[in-house]
Length: 359
Image (tube, rainbow, N blue to C red; front, side, top):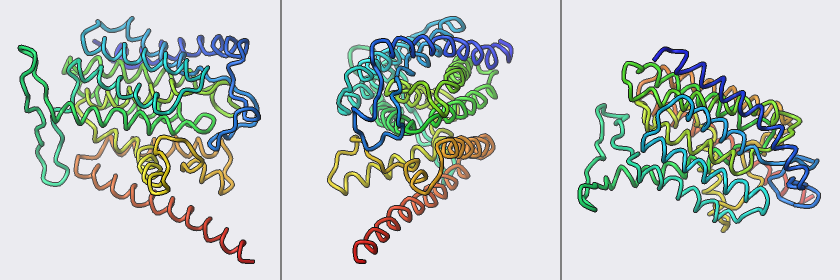
């Protein structure tokens, strides 16, 4: 298979499909009144001022999956990915209309992960970032005749996929923020898989990654400031699901995804810990994410979105060139810097409020 079939074609096909479907979805959602009106539905995480329809998940899921159907033969792995993606899209539409509980959305994330893990997609090994070599996780337990359950590999995948789904979904709070991140991350994983195109097992991974990037590129003009459509749970969680699964299937495992998605992942860890310490549910939304902090500092929505894109692009470029040890140290450094910034912003605001209260 030539390079165009692995890279450019899936990107362009998915972009066109998403770009054509999105205006239709916008019209349908507006016709039925399926919009997020900040004046009627109060939520601390909302940053828009006018009613905006969601439904972006429909465009990007169909853009990705229809491209895959056209370009790839369907095997058990791909079938599981498509079914899980369809599940996320359906629940996303229901959430757009009925505003489902975040716990139900979390259960959906777990079910999507279980579907692909049940098809045999697991993290069979991880590279030791300190001592070199690999740590094997493929010890199996026989179950159901010839079926073997790789306990550690499957368990790690069941933790990894929902975590990335939540983290990426939480990075859709501003106009254009999410699609740009996904385009960059998808291209990075696609390029890394294309490097190993001599291995035919990597062809579907490259096609999937570039199709994912293309679908979100086609959706981006409708979501960038001022947004005409919002990704919703479907658009955010599908992106996280695909990136997490592709990271497992690609030769890079999870190391590259940890670097290129460093900002959303670290932000999610910080948010989860903060909410738990405050006695709140870690999955219940608030106005404490990095993009909210940057807006509180006076940054505009476009500036914050482009900042996320640029940081993701820089980290992605580094991920293409670094070995496992260097990726590990990069993640440690990014974690320390971002964690320190978030603590500084939060603590500084607390001190400022206390000073004002004391006169």
